[in-house]
Length: 116
Image (tube, rainbow, N blue to C red; front, side, top):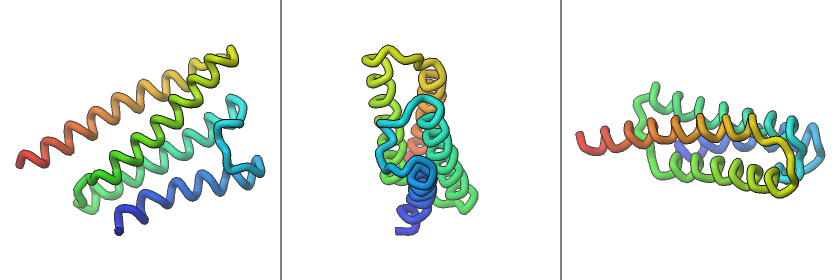
């Protein structure tokens, strides 16, 4: 339960920012820079919550993987939408590649601790 609360705080903060700035809860409808700002707030908050859990010596759970997957799927949906509309997607593509790299590192760390 504690992990759910810790991981939900950055999600809530990013959606509060989204509603405060753009009066919507749908990040898919945002244009490029606004979506990237929302996405970076969401990513940095979520990964900082993972880092805080590691400092507190908590284990990485399935909830962490579900959260990472959900954020990644949101980025993929926006990437596909940008491709279909013919918009530039360079920054989002770089963020998604970095997210894949960090995801692989987190998964390796998870399985390394499972074996011990």
